[in-house]
Image 1 (cartoon, rainbow, N blue to C red):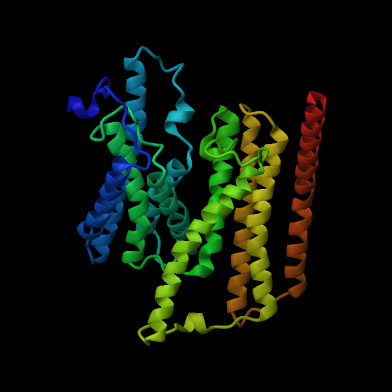
Image 2: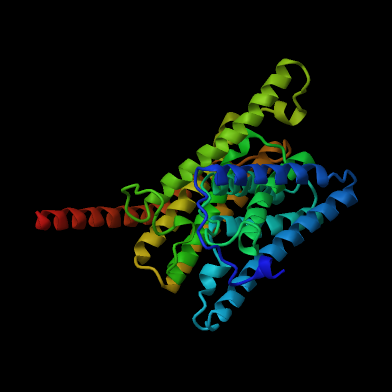
Length: 382
């Protein structure tokens, strides 16, 4: 136990985890862990599946809370106090930490709510496109593992198991048929990244820490000023998600060609082109302008360590409201008894653009000013 939890049980020589045999061992260990979980959690009854979800939620909760407690106890052991303990950083608002708590909430809600619940379907796709991708990239570039602790130490095992479960849980949701991976739902992954960005940016600006690369992308120099590096990161992450969604589409296409998969009535349903366009535009506006409001707010706040960072959550609130309206319109579109008011829908989209326009203009002005300042300073140096 002292070996596993010891505060001073450090190695005489640090371990290098990057792109070597240690890295290969780590990937094999995670792959084996996920495969074992896939066969170990095999309950088929509804009661058994619910029990499995609660068990997974509890494991994640204990590991995540245990990590914070261990960090605090280590801090005290080294002579620190509660006052100088970095609560923000150790509780963590990194992407995977946000996804860990989102996974816990999703698993609990999936036990309480009906399987076809639309909110759950949003969360399932966010887990598949954000949590799972984040977990995979963590092991592709393992900078989260401590180099001065043994692999079989709580610090490292906790990190590995939590991120491995972030990979496994979405796979389990596909296994129990709660989640149907459909490329048409990839826009929900974009919603997930805006959600992560809003939460991480708020925490970063309030605490002064750089959560989820909100303030800067310190792995690679993109040459982009804050906060314009964020859309690039988001597009890269969505591209990774598209690969996994695309793989499921290829399998589905092959099965249809072989006649093993029937197209459901829901998939056969064709909507009025105008109504469908309104629905799609509403979703695009929700993601685009939700992100724009968050980025604009963050750029206007400027330096970190300010409670004004909470304003970044406006983007998340705005996006959620937009999506609620969009889903309402979709419900009306699918209901033949409901007469559509086209003018109302057009007004809705126009107001969306008008509402987000000032934020976009302010954001653009700030960016242009920063570029002018940069150019002027370079000229003076010359």
